[in-house]
Image 1: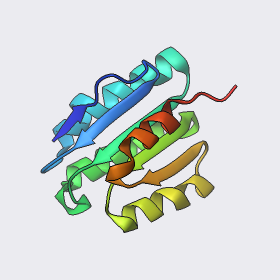
Image 2: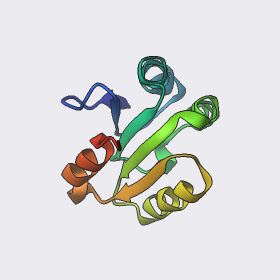
Image 3: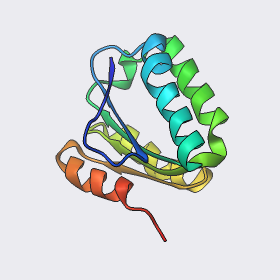
Amino acid sequence: MLSLIPNLPDYVLGVRATAEVDEQDLKSVLLPGLSRLTEQYGEIHYLLVLETGVENFTPGAWFQDMIAGIRHFTKWKKMAIVTDQKAVANFTDFFSYVAPGEARGFGIAELKKAKNWVSKKEV
């Protein structure tokens, strides 16, 4: 399940993933949020708190996630992935080298730090 994270700046989309994440979750939460950011701000500041294993994402969810990444590829400005899954955090740090913008992995205990980092706009 995906749910929005409240109390973030308007230009930051915060999403929490728990239990099973399916295609409908991405279509109803993630995709509209990304579209709103690109329409209003022309860039994406994204915070994902991953409180479920990546194995709990259905194939349809992975497909929708891939579509979202490609559709908005040039709009990514900052992406913070908060998880205690080391492989995911390491992949996030690597992703920063191959994609536009910055991507950084944070541990669950670093949620406040991740929120501050993703919310900071560079001038």
